Length: 366
Ligand code: MRU
Image 1 (cartoon, helix red, strand yellow):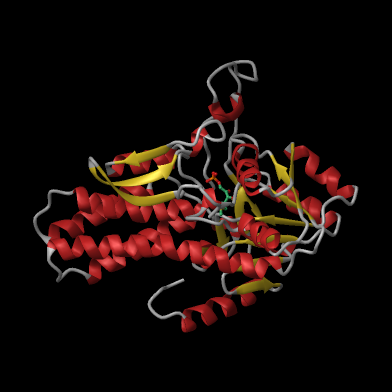
Image 2 (cartoon, helix red, strand yellow):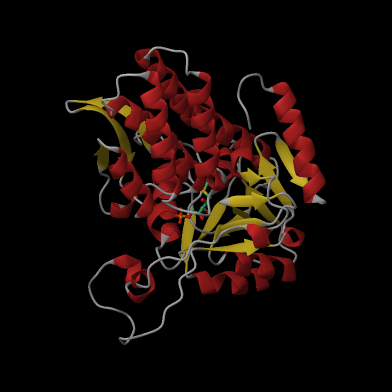
């Protein structure tokens, strides 16, 4: 996490009792405001409207949301608390469909709940909170390891292009793609980042630029449509992006526009790296066609940055607003994980790395 930056999402004790505290990312870069969610519904709303966003951060918020539901519940028995966990998980699972970290975190909370059925209600609450906090702390640790492996791939004096925000704001801290960039910068490499603005919600312009500015990492903001031309002119040495869900064959769902970047990178022989923890890999899906792609509100396209001032198009207008796209595995040079870098063929390389981490980690599942 960058110096002086509050945690993206965490558990806190407020005057009103326990809360899930998060940076309200809809207000950045103008204002840095912390929002306290006192009830599960507020956590769900925060995920739906992208106050908290980015695959790993959504997973952390969901885990903390389950803990909050349990702590705020009036249930008197452990059996009733188990039902609270189930209901909370069902509610949270409806918030956003694409980032698998959400479902991964809910599954972990469910498993701990089921294994805690013989505990007293108080002990049950403690166990659930401990697991949620473990998921959060573990995410930061995974990002640091991703940064460590990824920085080795970044040459000195590199111009790196990134899309969307896969930084501290998209994780519990440090970031995945921005974790790689941070680590390279911390190693003293002279790097410069091309930041795609990332229409329609401008996560690149609003959030990635904000993070890089705070870190003092040199960057230049570009329109998404400028990326291919920069590559054509030899001004991009590599692309590093995050992911919302990676299928078993290595196909990657990430923010809309990522696929165009990958196609341009392949055309110009620019290495294209994806940085993501194993909590983003969905081995249950054979390929990217099976990844559910979220479609969001037309207003996000009709208004710049969703600010309800003047629409940028005539009304009425037909708008299609998919939030993510899928980049086929064949366009990806490597996937940087917390266990090392998976290279082609990605399917076997990912499973090998996954089995290495699963066998070497005791107690924490990938
Ligand atoms: O819609 P968002 O802002 O949640 O989308 C986020 C992204 O697409 C990120 O690139 C991805 O989650 C990786 S975050 C480490």
